[in-house]
Length: 558
Image (tube, rainbow, N blue to C red):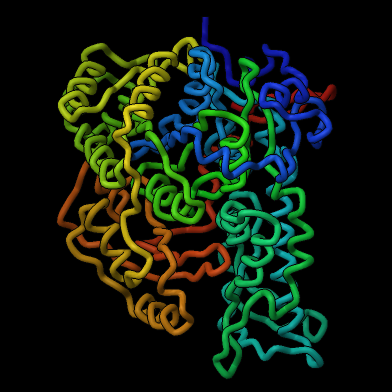
C-alpha cells in the first residue's frame, strides 16, 4: 500500500474551529478576525514584548539542500507536535508559501506527510491575501513612479535610467524578468526598461517582515530608495506621497495569521521572503506574537544555515532584539549523499561512503552556528531509503563534535515520531550554553561585513568586486547606508557563489557583481554570482498535475 499524499492526509483530519485554537493560547474569540472557520488574523495589541522576552526561541535551519529541499517546514511542524506531546506550551511560527514554487517546483509548502499545517489548500493558494496585498502595494508605487516620469506639472525630475523599483507578481515567469514599459506614445508614458520580480523578493515583503508595527511600517515604506533625479538627488517613496496609500493596502497583511497543525495545535504563518535573495524568515511581528502567546516558539529560516540562519541572526535578531536559545540543523541522508557526490538520480540509493564524504558540509554548518554562540541539535529527517549504517555515521560524527543527532520521523509518524527530537531541543535550550551574538558589528564598512561573512561562514579566501559593485559601494556610503547590515544573495546549493562547488570548499574566490539598496527594509543586498529575482518554471511544472472538480475538490497539491 502506497503512502498517502499530503493532500489526502490533510483531508483525513477535521480541523478544529479557529476559536478553539485561539482559546489554547488564551485569545478571546472577540479578538480573532476570522477568515472562514479555520483561519484568522491576530490583532497586534496581543503582543506583549516584556512577557515575550522570558520565553524560549528555537530556530530550525538546515545543511546545504538538494533541489527538493530537506524538510525544514516539516521538521518545524513535527517538532512543535512533539513538544506539545511532552506538555510544552509551544507554537510554530512559519512563513507563508509563495505560489511560484507551489505551481512550479514544490506543488505545496505547508509541511508534509503527518507534519502539516491546515487548511492545506487555502495556505498553499491565496490564504488570507497577504501576498496579494504586498503585490498591490509594490505595484502602486511602480505606477506612481511612471506617472511622475510623464508628468509635466508635478515632475520630481527623476532620471528614468536610475529607477530601481520593479513590479512584482507571485508567479514564476522568466519572460517578465526584462521588459519595456511606457510604449504607446503620449498616452503610454515614458518608454524605459523595466522588469518583474517574484513577490517574495519584493522590498515590501522584507519591510512587512521586519516592521514592528504600523507606524514603523509607514516609516520604512517612506525610506524606500527609488533612484535619483537628473541632478543626482536621491528620490524616496515619501517624495511621491505614496506612504499612506501603500500602508492602507497592507493594513490587514501586517496582522499574523493563526491556523493549526494536523494534531490541532496552534500555528502562526506570516510573511514569505526567499532566503537566497531576501532575508528568508517570517515576520518580526509573527515571532513576537508567538512569544507573547506561548512559552516555546519554533521558527524556521530558508535554505541552508549559510543563508537563512545567518540572516535570521544578523538581520532579524539584531533588529528585533531576539535571543535564540537553540538551533536545529536539519540534515537528510539524501543531502549528505548529494554533498558526497551523488547525482540527483542517485539520491535515494544508500551509499555510506558518500554520506561519510558529505558530512563535511553538515560539519561546516555546525561550526557556523557555533560562531553565533547558539547551541545546536541535528535532526536527521528520515526518508524510506535511509539505512541504519548511514544514520550511525551521522550520529557518531555529530557526537564527536558535542552535538546530539536525532532521527526525526515527523513526516511518517507526526508528533509521535518527534518526541525524541523535542527532548533533545529542550535539553539544548535549557542548558544555558547559548550566548547569542551577531557575526559582525554595524559600524564596520560594507566591505568588512561582506568579508567577515565570506571568510568566516563560507570559507572564501578573497572577495572580488565588479566595477558596478564598486560604484554602488560609493553610492551607499554617499547616501549614509554603509552602517546597515548586509543581506547576501547567492546560490543555496553551495557555500560559494558557484552552485557546483559542493561539500565544504575553502580557499575560493567570490565575486560581488552588484549591491542593491533596500533602505526601507534596513539592509543592503550584495549579489554574489548571478542571482535571479524572478524564477522560471521547470520543464514539467507542478501545475500540470493540478485540477479542481465541479464540486470544488482540489487535486494535485502535494
